Length: 222
Image 1 (cartoon, helix red, strand yellow):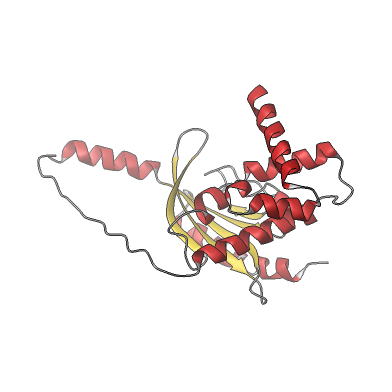
Image 2 (cartoon, rainbow, N blue to C red):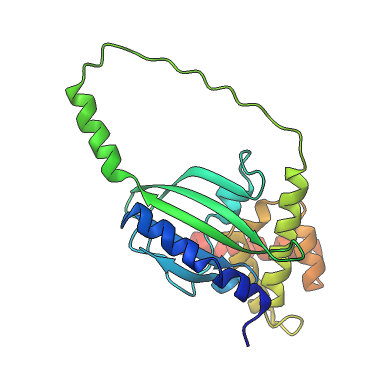
């Protein structure tokens, strides 16, 4: 049975296809179902850009979107990510909410701008570089509820990640793997996340920290 969240997310597929077709093969569009964080990708088009596959998890959502100073009104446009083969990708992410205003998904656009960078480099060699143009950028910080919004989204992500695990019957190694997953996704970069994870798993903060230490030791051996 298709859930209400999935029905809403599926309604974004025609929009995703339109964007991908409009901007061509170097523009990848991905839809994430954040009610299923461990396997959030439900749709992708032109996925050769970053290699995103259906069934994979989100990647840059926390570290580069939610924690960005420019993340406002549920979107972040024009941030850079780098692929494993060192290509620069220009990305934009918009969160999707349900009728109760809960975050249920994300629409991500990833454009490979390397052909344009190569073109610019060629133009730079053809055009004299004697004229230097200085542009000033002023960034005005708005006083809004962005921080509270991000904490609310992080709280929902933690709840969904743990809800989709065999909690409360998890064995120790399963809890460590869950902590590892959340650490990889940047969950513990969010303020108060250790306390929230400890509460959701029914363990102490000290235990969460000890699991994180164990994860870091495992990573150092890999």
